[in-house]
Amino acid sequence: MRIAVDAMGGDHAPEEIVPGALAAAQIVDAEICLVGDEIQLNALLSDTTGAVARAAVDTRRAGRVTVVHEPGVVGMDESPRAALQRKRRSSMAACVDMVRDGEADAAVSAGNSGAFMALATTRLRNIADIDRPAIAITIPTKTGKAILLDAGANADCRSEHLAQFATMGICYAEHLLGLDSPRVATLNIGEEQCKGNALTQATYSLLASAPINFVGHVEPNAILDGHVDVIVADGFVGNVVLKTIEASLQFFNDGIKAGIASSHLARLGAWLMRPVFRSLAAKCDWAEYGGALLLGVNGVCVVSHGRSDRRAIREAIVVAANAVEHDIVEEMRQSVQLLSALPASTEVLSNSPQV
Picture 1 (tube, rainbow, N blue to C red):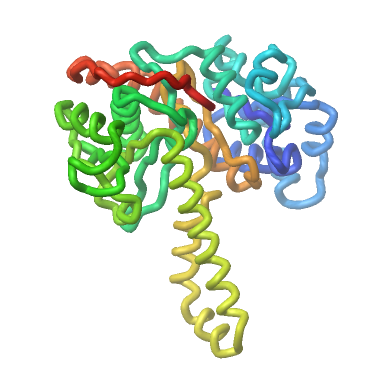
Picture 2 (picture 1 turned 45 degrees about the horizontal axis):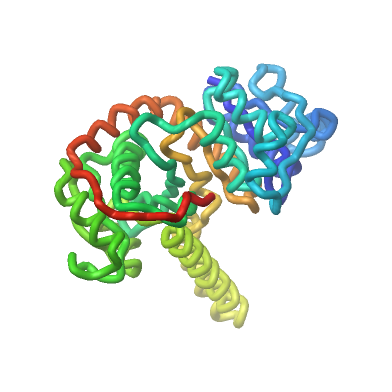
């Protein structure tokens, strides 16, 4: 297995990308190919100060971390169209091209997510019967994990698009989370079938008639309860919910830290509660969830957060490796056959997909 990593993409590239890749190489059975400016990358890999760097030397001797020179960088504020016009002249595009050409089994990038999605959809193309790819993110719940999709790839959708998202989410939940008959719900402002806009009501009708474990609508305040496994929404709503969850968890974490620092008694209580706090912190730490799979394209692509540190990059590579090991693209090709059971939608939507 070979995983191409965009070493120049992200707010902390390449300084955090390289140690993240090195850490991942100790975990996954794969060659990690760092794509970027070889001068910068080799300098970071040759730095023998510190335990992580020393591990890097051993890893490179085993041939598990390699470098492909491509100095071009897609800026975080660059438009997807500009990224497409670069052709191969960027580390991000080179990673996608490696997957397309069979030189890598997966691509990982913490760079410009819109550009990464545009490159993946145009160069890898969509799986047959999938109109639009979707970003699938795992979120913590009281009972484990759930999948939210679309988390930002498509701002405007038809009901059949959401039905496709549901099918892909089920495949993800079954093969990567090990869930049997995952419970699927549409994200809505109320649980009642009659509530919501035209999109959620039409999607309800489609999914209710599909051979899946559809449990109806779920409200945003209930998605962390663990009663559903796959939560389906258009990319606009999904992205708003995702960022609200991230901000809420950060607010909670900052409040706890400030409270602990407020007095000696609070610090003593926190010391006694250390196991609880550590467990909760690990469960709520977005970096521990790695990256989000871009589902629906003919290749494994993992979108990592722009501010990813080395831990997040490590986990994103682990996500990519698991997807390759479970042959998630082929499993998804087979899963979309469920869509043949869905009736055609009569909705009219004039807006084009957005990334």
